[in-house]
Image (spheres, helix red, strand yellow):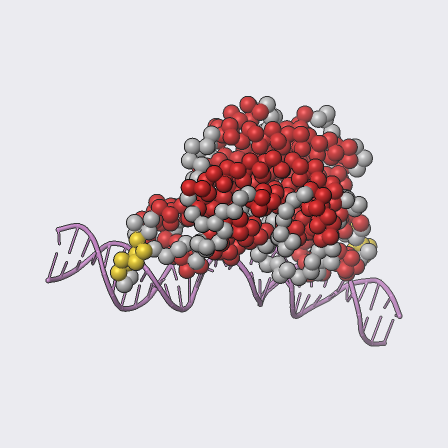
Amino acid sequence: MKISELSRRSGVPLPTVKFYLRAGLLPPGERTGVNQAVYGDAHLRRLAAIRALREVGGLSIEQIADVVAAIDDPGLPVRDVLARSCDAMLTRPGSPPASPPAAGGEIDALMVALGWEVRPDAAARRELAETLAALRANGYPDLPAEAFIEYARLMEPLARAEIDHFLEGAATSRERAVEESVTGTVLWERVLTTLRRAAHEHFVSQAPELTRH
Amino acid sequence: MKISELSRRSGVPLPTVKFYLRAGLLPPGERTGVNQAVYGDAHLRRLAAIRALREVGGLSIEQIADVVAAIDDPGLPVRDVLARSCDAMLTRPGSPPASPPAAGGEIDALMVALGWEVRPDAAARRELAETLAALRANGYPDLPAEAFIEYARLMEPLARAEIDHFLEGAATSRERAVEESVTGTVLWERVLTTLRRAAHEHFVSQAPELTRH
DNA sequence: AGTATCGGATAGTGACACTATCCTATTCAC
DNA sequence: GTGAATAGGATAGTGTCACTATCCGATACT
């Protein structure tokens, strides 16, 4: 299909499709002439993925560019694709990696306690350390890092199942599986957090009436 | 303390503090003269909460304004504060509530199946419906809404424990408990999602080596 | 008395994600 | 074959957002 049809079928405005092409989010179409190119289903899927990462995941264009760079790197082992896109998704738009957070050592100890193999420089470590610091500044002044363990144990079987599902898919088509694993990460994350909030509302509404003080 | 000390102690630049005052995120200080005012610890806590909601939660100024409007409404029952701030946090910045998502009915049925009491117009319902639609457009074309049930059952005990903890606090000081419940919602959410991603990395690294294809 | 700081108002900045316009070259319908 | 309708590519413009800078007259400290 040509670019106008790609735009129409995906629902993404044509200037935006061009913008994504320029930014490298969407690979170029197959050239059929000096100024003509055709696009395929992979482009449609990629556009859906970009919109999901933007609108549901809230990622910046730059973050998405990092993610697709990992996806489109043909020689990169699957595990590294996931690691790199996880890092990209956790690296906040306007934050230079200025100061290693103070709580970093505690998070390292936590990972050891959990028995989790996570790269020493994984963005998730920094993220957890920062969140621990933020919790301490917001009503949990003496919170130990071990408080995260029960949450971690809860996520273990879930993450396990998700990775198993992904590895099945990866055996057939690397490109699709990897792309879906990235969108799946942010979409299922949204499912999880929204269900948590709905459950909050449910349990609060079941509690005895509380008004002011 | 005066505004400059508030700025210094909180680490928030003074023009930004003024900006938050103007936007209504920070309540005005107690006036001691025609052009003097003093601020207290509540203002320091509020500033920490604002930064957490902005930087960790990624909320817009407008969303935070909605949240603090609920917190600062003295006659509002606690359950309604949580409901309103949950809605505000889930209402995306630039999205007019244009079209009720197609999957809304399925989510309603899901809530019935779960036995959850959630307002019919809760933002969480729309959010779940949109996420279901996004999943169907991104590699799960026939996903039934019931697929969310196992995630929901996983969140149930967690949400239950979090609400119990919150209700304990609410019995002593409404203002602090409510504010902490809001920051806690977004901060613990970040803990949960980051641990999930770390667990992904752990399980992928344990899988047999996969390269291309 | 004189300098510093205050609160309040207004305007400006930089980043970001598009969006619009132009241009030349090629297709496609007839 | 020919003329209108795209194609692709480059460049510039727009709107939003979260600050940030400047100005002001009025206190407050020393």
